[in-house]
Structure formats: C-alpha cells, structure tokens
Image (cartoon, rainbow, N blue to C red; front, side, top):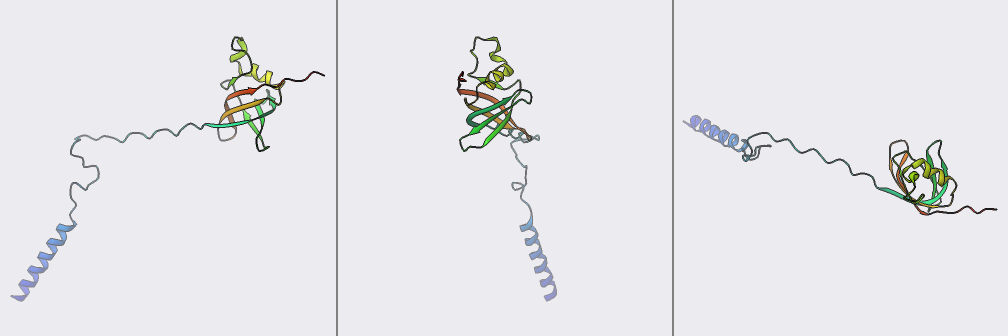
Amino acid sequence: MRKTISVGMACLIGVFLFASCERRPSVEAGNDPSSETYQPRATPAPPPVSNNEVKGELLRVDTKDSTIVLRVENGMEQTFKFDDNTVVIGVLTPNSKAAANTLANMKVLTKKPGSELTVKWFDNQTDKMATSINVTELRKIKKR
C-alpha cells in the first residue's frame, strides 16, 4: 500500500510539473487573435541622407579632374568632387543660360580664389561628392 501511495504521489507531482511547463497560447510569438492571415513586418526606413556641410575659402578648382579644394576654418584643405548634378549657387546671374551649367560655373570659380563657399556633400566611399556649392562671397581678382 505504501508503494502505491508513493507511486501515486510521484505521478501527481509529475503532472503538476508538466502542467507548469506548458506554454500558454498568449505567450507564443505571432499569436495575434485579431489577425487571421500572416502580415509581414514593414520594411525598415532607409538611412537618412547625410547632410554634411562645410564652409571655407576657395583655394583652387580643377575642371579636368572635377575637383574643388577649400581651406576650412581649422586650416585644413578639403577636396571635393563635383559632377553635372552638383548645384552651384551665387556665381552667374539666374537669367544666364549657363547658370544651370555646373562646368561653366566652375570655370568662373577658377578665376576667383579666396571666395567664401559653403559645400554640402556626401561620402561615396572613395571621395567626398559635392551636392551643392553656395558662393557666399565672390572675390574679385585685382588687376595689376
């Protein structure tokens, strides 16, 4: 009789242990009773566009290599690449046909070292690519 009670108690304890380890339906991942069909997660938003901006003094423009070099406030020289998509503001008058032409604006800037510029750019893994160049102060070359 003692053996039967011991076996019965062991079985009863086993049942309670098994019941306590059972997973509840409300705890399971993805068990949402309000939606009957699978709904995938929304795609993550793309990383924000880099809004790097630097102000400095124009040192030189190289139209062959499509580069522009600035001296920034701390004295370092920064080189930026430009292309036909680079917007140049403040060089030519808006009525000029060449105002929308990046290369024409850059040719004007080659003769204006010392001009104050603000360059917005992004890093394209190898170079700093200028997206816009704003000429805040256009220097004139003194004639001798």
